[in-house]
Length: 400
Image (cartoon, rainbow, N blue to C red):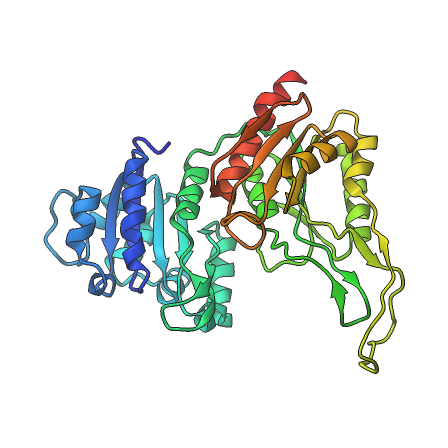
């Protein structure tokens, strides 16, 4: 998928450097020409020799060293690159790039390149959440740099939280997404819902679910890259939407319904990836409910079934649903596909490792209205978004 592409991998100094060896190897197996630039700090974790053997090219560390095959090396690498991947992207490197500092080969080459730049941050949780780092990430995102959200878990420093280097398949998926981007949805308006909804109990508490919104945001990013006009209706999430997407933020199922119904008539494709709450409290307390007893009784009522409504209203629209199940996956997905008049449903068993909520990968089955089904292997949500749009293009758009 990357055959003949020139990818410059910038390796900054962090404990996650050892994982980059695997990433370079995977890029090579995809057919890419990989050139590695390391900071001196990175060379303290993994030697340049390792990357030279894996990539098959000399590794640049010292800006003042004698050149080998490259003349004015940072310019040559910057010009040759089809994509620049900075992994791990440390807080220091992000800060230097955001503020125009070019004091080593890595930062100098990033400044000189016109290729897409992808940053995969990895650092201590507190460092990643530091307002200065977040401001730098926001600034670079607005300037067109691409970021891959770090993972959560136990970090090398012993703390637990956000800051882990994204999984290799997620990073490779992002690279493939950018380099193989097609413009086959230029004349289409795609309406996407993402995240979970929050149904208020009182001004403090709510009923919600575990959805992170990652699948919907991946769909929005890929659809935008492929030329579509993208309308994203998002429940509460910490994710940053890609620049160029029109975003409507909502909290409750009722609010999501209002926005979706308003946008639906002019939409060509609808991707309902949001995990909408099925029930909400029948009444909401105007004040915080105090802990005056050992139990709290709530009467719940059904929320509107937005996807069912769209199925009754659709005319020219292509309607895609999502089903997250824990048992009887195919039976439940097939029932939803038929009852809600969908064209396709993306079904996943959230009990499987690497599938479901709050992870960067997914394992799904695609069920179609004509009765056939496709089973997909584990892949990043970005890669899955590409596959879903490919299927829409092949199965539906060519028939309209």
